[in-house]
Length: 435
Image 1 (cartoon, rainbow, N blue to C red):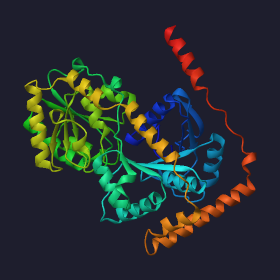
Image 2: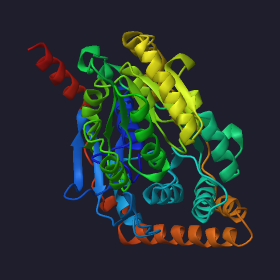
Image 3: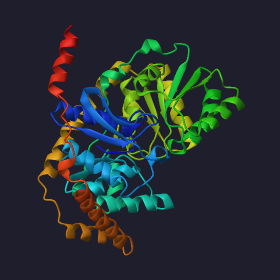
Image 4: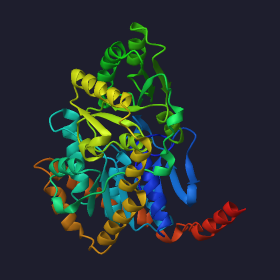
């Protein structure tokens, strides 16, 4: 598993990598994660169940994404692949430079590769055009692509000019036992609306800033709890100051994943104001914790929850106020049953199911033939009149770098790492649980 985004950073991609890796380990596979260093967290670390993480010292440029090195990452990546005897490279996140580079280098080394797209992108602005061209380069030579929703699949197929048969949909999931409802934790004298999100433009923070004063004015018994951090936090603080809402808007800051449930159960309604979303795991966690969800109807969100658990709104201020007001009335009329919500979500989303479906993809690509060098060049050449030629040069140089590394640092000189004793670890764990 390769991505710029992993713990201790918090988010949907990070959670996806961790949970999927844990379930694959439980199914008998060896999983290694490669990500960039986070502060002092560098080098090799072991997390739960012997999941091995390589924190590579690379420069972060924006939002935990690393500076592209093209070939600078290759020596480290090759050493890890040989040490850990890797068969499949699975990249996550279109914004991750590590992911794109790992797939390129992995294919050069003859490994199988697949990619999971967790985001939606447009087609018109400059950043989307550049990202889409980079994605087309990476996915031109990949064995399979996974998307987290059908909307995400359609978006990825169009952006990267892929054959739909080579793209599968496997949704995110949650550990339902970590989000058990607790109706007694909510304030009985108020209706509490929870927001847990990165406080950035893409998550619709401008809409949130606009609707909070209006909802507070319309409903005197409503209060907000906003979790998360980001550049838009200052806008929320200014709004709270301007409208004197200090006693009704609580900004709790960044929330660790194991603390999310404790924040959720304080509320009755969960509000998501995202402008674009491929899946939105946060609304699944909220529904599992027994909250009624109000969300903008964007991206893959309509595919996630049944209609009785969620109220939709257009990504507009007036429509969001109407949807939130409707949800407040539903709470007042006691139309929401938290335990029922939890039981339903528990049946709908499971990481075990996600791991089983991912495993089938691994098995299918394991039997595919590795394309020869000329076929890889042909695929890259078809990426555009000018870009295609550039991509061919990048790939050809990557092949030469690999040959140089094989000569200067022979495989026989790379020490093979010992496999973590998963079975023994589980046995000791079970014995300690009995004690």
